[in-house]
Image 1 (cartoon, rainbow, N blue to C red):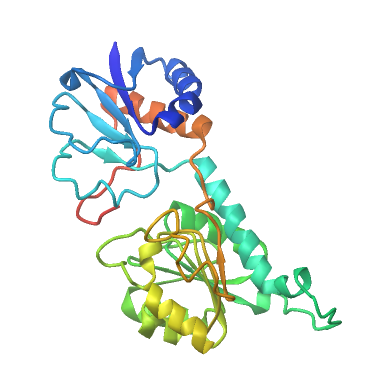
Image 2 (tube, rainbow, N blue to C red):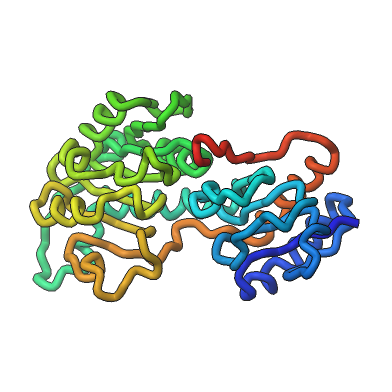
Amino acid sequence: MLTILFSAPPARWPQYQAPLTAALQEAGIAARIVTETEAPETVDYVVYAPNGGLSDFTPFTGCRAVLSLWAGVENIVTNDTLTQPLCRMVDAGLEEGMREWVAGHVLRHHLGMDAHIVNPAHRWDQVAPPLARDRTVALLGLGALGQAAASALVALGFDVQGWSRTQREVPGVTCHHGAEGLRAVLERAEIAVLLLPLTAQTENLMNAERLGWMPAGAVLINPGRGALIDDTALLAALDAGRIGHATLDVFRSEPLPADHPFWTHPRVTVTPHIASETRPASAARVIAENIRRSEAGEPLLHLVDRARGY
């Protein structure tokens, strides 16, 4: 019988206990799940969330893999004590949640809905927005979440320009890569969505120079990682009118401090890191499948490349 350590905040265990137990049983895996252990050398797999308190993986000498509940792994991938294979979370629940959040906020800005929702002057401004096919939306990051969001925007009719560090092919998306590709995409982006992983190469990607490449009045939407954006540069671009609005779901410090200028800036919308949430039912099936694959000697799904950082 396998021993699986569930290392996540205590409030998460009641949410995962039944789905994870059921998923393991359905996969034919005999296992006991523990939330703490005095014998780490007996643990076969760790189901992990970076805010669960586990930081030293050295004692887990028998652990075959660490299976993250989060899509982002920047908080663990540089941990020198982690020598076991690390898998990030990719599942349908994450993709569906991100697709819906991105589509909703892109449509909000495309249609100019804010002016109608809050209209104290009772302005009767009969100016219709352009059709989606006449609006260019950039998707920076074409991994699983980026592709899910991009496909939804393509289905709505938008001109979707995609960018990733390496070449990708996504149906309906004009894909670019590399430094020249990034500039070409941002120069056309009336709305830009950031869904890149956080690495040494992507930190502060949206700095003053790159924000300046975007068309005047463009919208920036960030459900990816807070540190993709230079906050000071973004605030300056908003104040100058270079960026028309920023809708931000992720931040360098979370919860976002009460005195942070994003809260009160008239051109910033803050959402509390809700764009996409790991759903226990679907995530449990991903965890169980990876354990089954490992025990069968098959390649693990969503294995993290330590050199690339994701």
